[in-house]
Image 1 (cartoon, rainbow, N blue to C red):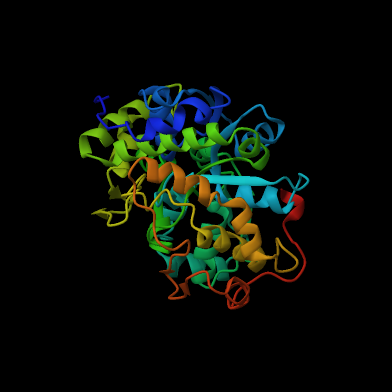
Image 2: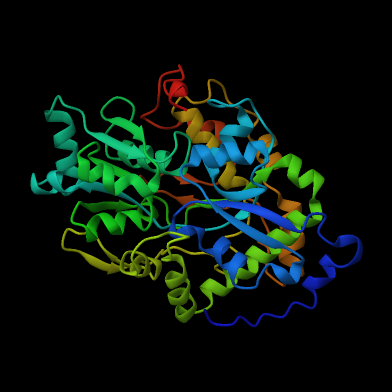
Length: 405
């Protein structure tokens, strides 16, 4: 990769003397996904050492395994799904509640909803055809996502509901690790999936499926992966946590700096110890160059981003709030939580501000940001309880999917 050249004189003030990291060698979990890039670059391209850190990357087989190792302390921090961290914090699913921390955002955009080749051959190549297939055929389609409370489950649910398809009643959903999606599609065990790249592109390359929708078409510049850990880690090692954020912020800035940097990062990711996928499945969508396997190609206006002048990395309160509204919408929470109290506890705004300001990275003035999603519904974080109740399609009061976690 190209040698980076980013001034560190101000930043290094944070890693000398009493501000030095309390723990220097960290075990960092990641998944075989394109959006693990900033962690891999930080660990392997010299971004961590100036902050007194050595990052030992540990690739995980599934999000459930990553979660369990994070909670046991086998991993110090990890690439995480927003919904995974909030579910653990709230005690949803198979683990008791544990205070969790979102240190920073790692990426925006770059996920996709994909259907199988048999559906494509049957003419189910658009939303109208999918809706007709769901309503006319008694055999339910089986669609996979990567973790019951994760971003991919919630993008899939949101998109299906926006098309008038109830994600809990009209289709079956199952959990499959992202790197196994294409194999499950090929074996006919699933009819489609929502996952991160490069697995949507790989399904097209292997002629096993096609892309019906991207996550950025659901919510342009949506929050995606985060850098997460337990609150206990932040409390025990605050200087380490700040130094880790600074190293990953620098790596994120480096990736988004130029197309050359993106191409060299894509090459790095393709290695067997990281994403272990062909470069031609990783690089095009990494650069925003999309083909859907159904005859359409475009340069996406909202590609996978890692920095965008720091707007990707800010742990906005509103991002955490949104995922909790979807837990409530789909019955994963029986009652409204204290939305803002939970988000303020999980989102490590003070630590992020310190790290970003030391690096001269602008910090947005407000911890809330607004957006309009594909169904025309605006979101600004001001009234999460009202927002959660406002949807025409939602779950019954019972927690239908708790047993699946």
